[in-house]
Amino acid sequence: MKNKKSLFIILAVLLMGLLGWWLWRRNVPVPAPLSAKSSSVKTQNAKTTGTASSPTPVPGTTLPSIGQSIGQNPVTGQTEVKINPALPDTDKMQMILSAQNGRQIDIYGKVVDQYGVPVAGAKIRGNIATLSFDGSPNPDVFTETDGSGLFKFNDLHGANFGVALTKDGYAPYVGNNWSKDYQPDPANPMVFTMYKLQGAEPMVYTKIHDYVPCDGTEVHYDLLTGKKVATGGDLVVKLTRNPVDIVRGKPFDWEISMQVESGGLIEVHDPYPYQAPAEGYAPSLVILHKAGDKDWTSRLNSSYYVKAQGGKVYARVTVSVFADYQPPPTAFDVGIYANPSSSRNLEYDATKVAKPPFP
Image 1 (cartoon, rainbow, N blue to C red):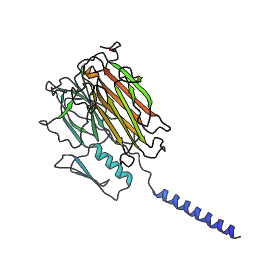
Image 2 (image 1 turned 90 degrees about the vertical axis):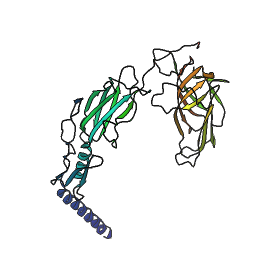
Image 3 (image 1 turned 135 degrees about the horizontal axis):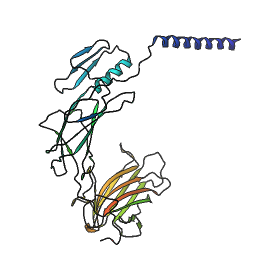
Image 4 (image 1 turned 45 degrees about the horizontal axis):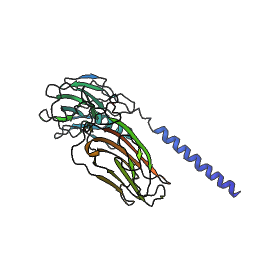
């Protein structure tokens, strides 16, 4: 009898909970999809495709129906929005999206090559990034640089803006997009650097895919073939970890050293790694990770310029190490673009391949 009474109480509580939930749902309005109306995109000296996916707020106005006041910051010139905190969350989200998509974008840019020379006739494709939940496409705008390498986009609106620069004889542009902190000024344009290609020379592309010991044993490799050699070679690698046999998922001490015989290495920081430096190479590099390091990792993914054989070979290599294979050995992979003709030119063309015997 006691068990039946307990069961009735539990069922009554569940029914009351379901009834309360149903009544609450009846009083909550169903939110409309978060989408934005389209408005035309305007730009000076540029062709436009697509439409912006948000309305442009009018600076200094108030929209009482949704409790949103919009104004323009007199210092930055950017649109700012204040939202009534008593509004439903869905309305707040929609207003935040509208405010972000209504940011005014004015770009004054200048394109130069790696020597600082203005690049005329570069094709510029700008992409206006907008925020929405309905998959609205982001519109593109187009222009090109004038004889002084200058270009501009004016009176655009969006949450962000990206650029792609192209021109025959130049590497595809790699660099930063428009910054939200940028202050539009025709006298102080943003500078975009493109790399002017020198012309590819015959090179070797090869890979090292190997497993190295974890006890500090030296392993030797030939950069032009990617093969392991018993002695000599261009690249000498040693990996040490403590303990040698690890517990996967638990940090451990480890280090890797890379040495280049009759040459050295420099870590690559250039956006266009197509010209090896003439000087500054270290004969060896050591990367150390202690188990207690805040940024500890069992991985290494880095790129390096390499000078080998006393300057007869220049290369750029991408090194990937996975130091946590258990049991040993552990993974070691390298991608190699090497010029065997004593030239520091590292522009690779798959149709121009150097073959042994190398110069």
